[in-house]
Length: 132
Length: 402
Image 1 (tube, rainbow over the protein chains, first blue to last red):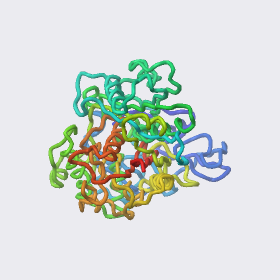
Image 2 (image 1 turned 60 degrees about the horizontal axis):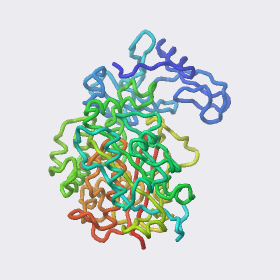
Image 3 (image 1 turned 30 degrees about the vertical axis):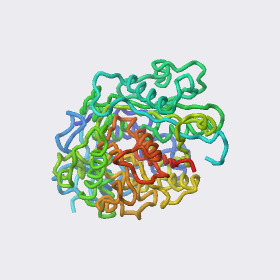
Image 4 (image 1 turned 90 degrees about the vertical axis):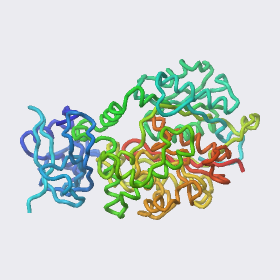
């Protein structure tokens, strides 16, 4: 599905390993307690380097979205919902909202993570409407 | 940027563009640069031998590790030049940075005459689909690009949020496109000149909700150039000098304790743009109020953006920008005409140079040379730029010599 398959770096290898295992984990700085997204080995807030990979709830709220009818690449589905979602833990991710009619997506909608396997190495986190 | 009456105060003495903009086949990116540069120097009454500073942007089509040197070589800039540099960093915002940095280079004494030029054959060289792909690949490789963040979709995220928070409507977004096209219809050089209605815009092909095709800017060929020199030197030239009264840039939201972002998804708030800060600074330097500003040049890559600048710069209240366009107040003859040349939505958008066309148009407006689209009595104008991923917000205030 992807234009570009992510290539893990020293900063992000653990993130992608955990995604492949079906788990959303982000690095949190043990010194100041802040979550870091995108993943990085040095804390963006306090420059600490003692990071722990903590599990996220996988629950999020749609901050904004767009139904894309003209994909930039033939590798992408003909129509998809590009979105920014705010994880309950407080960080914002770019993603797709999936498993629903694009016309039903709204700002403020509750969504939960699932993983879309795109290769032997990479599963992308995407979000579907939360089950009430 | 302090301002006084020093002979070293920077002024714009010449502006120019490639011979044509729009679909211009058969010309290289560097040739379009050279045409624009020659036109701007001719407008100033100067020659390339007079230039001692050269700024270029980058070309999507014709990449050079040292782009400004490649242009200087192509155009025949003499070796006595004292500054040759590329400012690709700001992407769309580079045009604002050009004028900002040129002003500083002149004020500091490093240069006396700076030529800033940007051009590209974005349409004939890349084709529309190639341009769309090149711009989508220009996102964070790991955490954004895999999701296909087409450029219109990125700005659509901004528009959708503005609609959610303030009730901005698709009709209001469409009215931005209608305003630009109405202006372009008065500009014989514009890439797209056929008048359109709000209904036409809404009925055009869906691209990325809420945007339809006509709410997006063009893909064009062309280039623009600006010559900046000292006030003292300008006195010897037979052209009206246009003063750089204020120039500032804010990054991100421009606020303390908000970490800078480079990628769109890292922005704290898509609607809280740094123009709030840079416009206030540039207006303070220029010692002007909102009522003094006669023309606004706004980087209109997508229909939401001019709405955001109007609000952030304080011309209207937050959430009121859409109505300002829908009521026709941004048209030539209205309260504050926006992009009388037709903007990037109807005049031309050849990629990185798109924002630079704002300067030739504003300079001509301030000289009173704009024919049927002339804003009557224009004395002071503002350029609000944009670049990166909602990350660079340059604002420049230009004025007729007082």
